[in-house]
Amino acid sequence: MAEETRKTEQVSSITVGRAGPSDGPTRTVGTTAESRATRGLEAATPASAPGPVAARPTGNGAQANPSNAGNTLARAAVEQARGGQDLDRVALALEEAGLGTLQGRQPWQAAGQLAENPRFREVGGLAPAQLRDLPAGQVVVWDRSQGDPRGHIAVTTGDGREASDRVRPLMTGYGSDYRVFSPQDQPGQSVTPTNPVARVAKTAPVSSPARPVEPGKRDWEGVKSWAFRLQGAPPETWKNVNLDMLVVDQSSQDGVATREGVERIRKNPDGSQRKVVNYLSVGEAENYRPYWKEHQLDERKPSWLLSENKDWGGDHLVKYWDKEWQGILDKRLEQIVKSGADGIYLDKVDSYKDLERMGVKDARKRMVDLVEHLRTRATELGAGKDFGIFMQNSEELITDPRIQKAATGFGVEEPTYGWGNQDGARRPPASRAEMDGYLQKARSLGKKVFTIDYPKPGKLAAAQAREAYEWSRGRGYVPTVAPRMLDSYMRIDGVQ
Image (tube, rainbow, N blue to C red; front, side):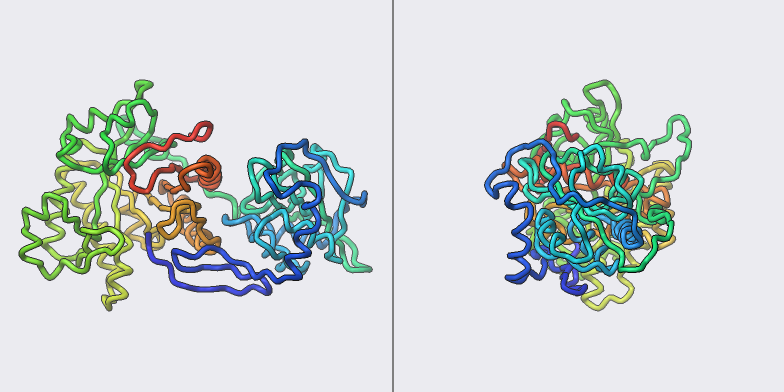
């Protein structure tokens, strides 16, 4: 995982953290704001393990009417729906629309604050089926439920949808009570007819351009499921799992390096064929690989072999442009192509940032050179133009025209959970929004995007996995979840 630069962006009273790996998103919460936030829905549902209840409205009976303020808020909410936390996105939309702010850490807490905001009036008496008929700009706050202790907040778009972390059909069955708040125009202001979601295309998930697949060619766009197997468990671990793609570690120990080994794990239980893609670390040398002993790296300590990775012992940063290292990669690529594998999954592409910090000014260009070289070499070895080259944790390189030609797609770790090498730690919203921007550009260029999250083991794993899958699929990506060691398959019922 690439190291994040510590940066804090202050937006009025909301602090959106874009912090280091061990930090999570933070909000400024004062005693007064906290006491206000704990009023509202708290009385409707006890704080301890709320159970499922029939959705019902609370409120004072006011009506929800179209308004300029509502149209403005709906436009802002659609623009902000770029991933992350629903509360963060709606809070920023309120600020942009000039309707105040929200504080606190949980969406359900917004109800008490909106009830005291003079620019809003609470709407009552709405059945769940009526929510999708609300005009643009109404704020719907759902209380905590048994399945989600956070609750949910969203802004209606006026066409049966909602904008929060993303634009989607408006929820009507969250499993808890809800409250609706209608923004009010300033006195004397007339309502101007408008289409508040006219710019939704700017924030909606980007679909890859549809392209016909020639017979016998690899259909990467058709890959809808995948898994990552790097160590520990044998390939047979996945023999009872239907997958469109499996990323494995090319190693002679389990036979994957051979054509027979690849074919052995290619077949799915339902008889279909999965794609087999081989892992290849290009930015670090690993001391357990055969090449380490073959090249006597312990004894020689060549100048291209740099510092050891403090998080992964035995892995060493390399000057990846060195001819000897590129020769090692070329040999491994040749083995992979001869095995009949469908592609390579490049790890540590983002190590160019480490080299930049060490003073190598053209480190990024040199990494692009390497990826381009691997594409050329694979073609020379007869892999075919449809041979997959996927780059992990380096989505920002999609802006380079040469990467746009060389790469088939990208893989990203921890888009939702697992931030900072901590299983279950949530990625900061600003970081995910930045990542998502690059990935959406990749999708617009026809590139495939795969995501892998690391939920917290135990009771939270299933809920976190479901959230990770929902976000990723909603953005047009292909998700998976796994233990961090990537040594087994994590099955989540009802998700995969």
